[in-house]
Length: 276
Image (cartoon, rainbow, N blue to C red; front, side, top):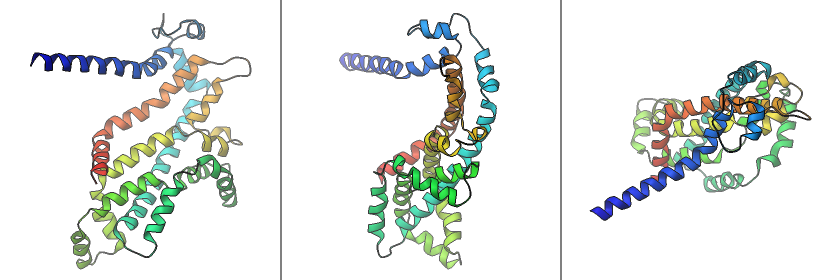
């Protein structure tokens, strides 16, 4: 008993130390956002500022135009997450529930797409968006970000839908429900944990997306997102490091709030996917 208790204490102590090391860069970034640039460059690993500089956040929000970038990012992220969830859920439902010729081949192709780097598809994607007349617009950025096969989410939905009893669909057919009604009123509500999991992951990826917003807003700086707007703090000869850390902290707050609110569904979705 004593040995077991001692082992638990040692394990917990090691985990606490490892956890602190893991989150230290995050703590350092937040506290550094209250420093001056001189203190930032000369303070070393000490994260605690001599005096809290709240003006860094005011400068990041107003002078660096982060107020507009924040609105752009919210619209861009919410629209992209919605489109990705709808397309992934529908694709996963078809692959997981419906047997048709070539189904396995499509699944193999979808999985193979996972190994194609996103940068390789940026040129044809840019040409397609331009051909649609959506270049230099926020809608074009949304279409570009939400395009492609979101393999992980498709497989999560397909795995979940595949284990749902077929009697539910048969009962819906008897009641006169068609494909769309069965999907929206029966299948989709049952997949709430997967929807939450995919929604959180896509929210994080989209919120911090850099390459596509950078390319598709090159001619319209006012349409930039928070991630791209970080460039405002980098000058030709000098950089506003504390302004950048303040802006990074601002951009991380919505992601943290989103995860804290949805973490229960996220854990259920991941656990269900692994179990299946």
